[in-house]
Image (tube, rainbow, N blue to C red; front, side):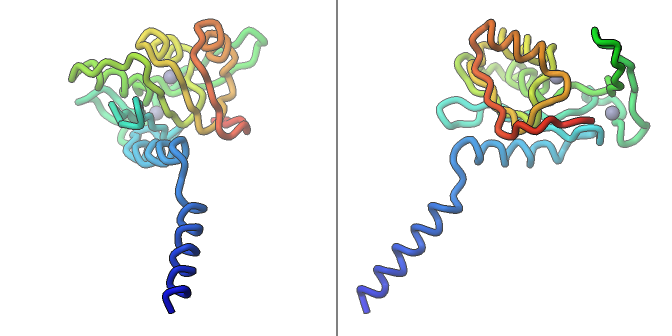
Length: 172
Ligand SMILES: [Zn+2]
Ligand SMILES: [Zn+2]
């Protein structure tokens, strides 16, 4: 009987181990949860900044506090022409999830030196530069972003490690 119980516990442990997320997966699940609060449906992205496996701050894409949301009044579209002549459209009403996470840390005085940032997509060029100067040393993106060449270059140059969990490129 005891042997059988033992066997069942072992089986349980094995099953738990198989389904238990690793740290990157765990924080990425939280990024998804945080992103559900986003107020622009062009990309419900979230961000979680972590140090020593502890959450320091979170952010999601949204309008400035007190300003109307895209979900209420529509997007504030902006055309961007790239070097290769291609044109993409972006909503510029919102503060990006990464920026909001940095701002929240600043508001309550949390140093981000040496931390890891988890986010939905490879950060845009502006966010990348802010991330570098905040002292963040590793960026983990759930997916790649269509125009991430500049971000990848600057992360490499400044020795910020970039890990993209899903290499498929997100278009939006
Ligand atoms: Zn929008
Ligand atoms: Zn950004």
